[in-house]
Image (cartoon, rainbow, N blue to C red; front, side):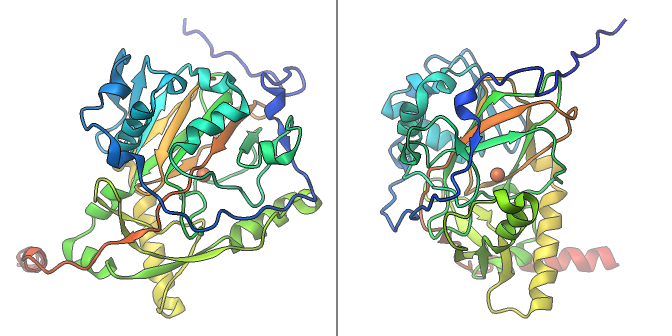
Length: 359
Ligand SMILES: [Fe+2]
């Protein structure tokens, strides 16, 4: 007989394991965005052999060929600065890293921020909740609390906060409590691979284009969904970024448009822009063979590099189960445009292939 998965207790029956991290909104809170800053990516300093990151590792394995590596036996909170530099490099190469049973969940707000700050100044979110326990909001204004009990939410691949002038690089997503059994996973998809999958002549058409990113639609959704409870701490933000970017450390190209924040291709008519963006979003959504799926346990910390990935939550678990996490989001470089490369014959080969197929 097959054992049944434990059924989920309701939120009322089970008090939260981390009450200090329950979501809190201060209706009067305002924030100043992080201004321009010089970003030196920690990955530049890393030893490519990763000796400091992996010296305590008991098991390292890929979650999928193109994206995601799980590292067991390593505590993020015990890593030296050199180990954190290597984490940045490995994350840029693999898109995301998964760490289990982390003490990071229990080291308190200040140390959690200190580790995340190694990678850049921390983003302050315009509308998502902060932890409840802060004595004053400055202590926790960089924390984003995710606390859901299966609200209706479709799969939507996105980059967090791409309308910043210097969008996030590495991001720390720390699961405090996850639904029992299965459900509530995060899907992370490689935008490096998404770009490589396109035909050479199509890739060249995208290089050199810019797109407008804005928080207008997500803010409108927040107002619609949360009504009077919605808190807007700063006005709508907007930025123009290259459609194809280059990672500052690995120099890999990645597709940098996402369905949450990218509004239009700069300089194109609405119809042209809508057509192109719909194609690119569909291409990303269909990329099951260049993404990985992270299943959570309490104490799982997932680190992803927003410059080479997109992610989506899956709210597919039993109604009433608790999924409680926090996110810290270091900002990074101004996105680097991929320059249009000379045609090295790839495009002609494309056309030749087409002709052959027609014969
Ligand atoms: Fe996100």
